[in-house]
Length: 379
Ligand code: ADP
Image: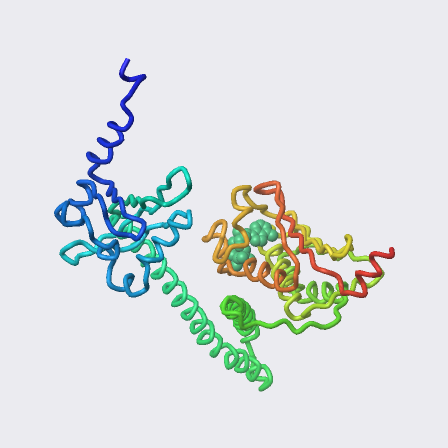
């Protein structure tokens, strides 16, 4: 049957002759065209005989001719490589199309190059799509940069009025004319403080994003740092009637860290624990040494986190339930900041929660100070 005994040379010739999309050119070893298929005629706009004898460079655009690309392509193919052809090509009328293809060498039994073959396809459509995507990516990048610049300006501008506000409250208190204003002044103080924290977080996240934050490392004792952080959130915790436990070993755990930045990490985690735990809940913060690291945990028995949210919780502006979070004063920055600051210290942070209503656990791992690491190895 013919199907099992095809006339291969004839079929191949038909394929090359009849394919309308694929240009097939045969060239002599010097790169002069010796044969072109009808698709070449159609796509390049030359008469078929006109093409024969042309240098392949006649099909290249001016800038590629100037760069010697036609000769380079012949050279690569002759050396036995595949010369990729993803570039603009020039039609007879000077217009361009985006070609995707390759040139290879054809050799006799002795390995001598007897001809070069070039196969290509007009993919101007693809180029258009790629360019569209590239423009889109550039636009996104510019938008992100504008957003960063906006965040930075916004946080600076929001910060400026806070200090005079706090000072004014201070002045009223000192003047002794507080009278019946005790409660409203307290409200202003607390709300200003909340705003200051939000704005500081915003400012920090934009500065870290711009690579403008350097750590000021110094010897830090983990126990002291955590005690300090617990003191810092005492008012919030008292207001919400939480029971806070600090569980640390007697022997000092020493780090080489920026204490201000680490305080920010743990105050953020503790504030969240207090915010997302109903009144009267339990919060514990502890630290132990594991290998070369200190492992610090902030655990609460509060509202917990849905399983599907766990992988996204550290992303900037992520809030599980924005109405709920906003009601408690938040922008979804705190955990992104925690993650960045811990990473800057060479550490990592993870979250665990068995689900809604099952509480949350945040685990921060940080490298011990060098001397401490050697001690840990001896222990
Ligand atoms: P926010 O300012 O909204 O608190 P964060 O980045 O600190 O932003 O936290 C992101 C989200 O993660 C919060 O909106 C909250 O839904 C969830 N979350 C953070 N900590 C806890 C926690 N201890 N318990 C339950 N949910 C939490």
